[in-house]
Length: 203
Image (cartoon, rainbow, N blue to C red; front, side, top):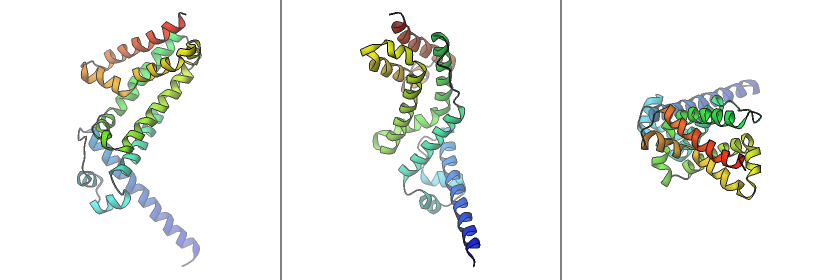
């Protein structure tokens, strides 16, 4: 057997392993999307069309699966994300930002609801959430840089308020605590974010 053939077989095994892992992650997220917020390994394996042994060969435990599924959710968010120009007037920036946040929050709602149930006992789900927070922080700091600069010593407080107002826990309260529709919830978010920034801009 020559080196080329060996390399080809290795590449083939690697590709099959990647397809299997992708199928497992897809099955995991599909079950969550259908309302099974705590799918077992057995249900995930059945949906993926593999054995339970194959599942745990590819993922040593639920934590490693949470990591892979979290990465896929972030990838989906990145694919759906459209940058908002920092050069727009404040009102237009707020509107565009909140429209996008509403759309992305709806996208991740099933996985966010599932994570909320298990995060108290899952270090990986906590790490996943911190990645979402970091991305929103980066976006807010870029999009509202001028207003944050105007806040002076209150910059960090304003930044934290903007992040909190546009993360999933706040969205969950609007949608499921108060029972608002998507458009109503987005309007409340827009009013909140706009009020926080208008206070600074008026100074």
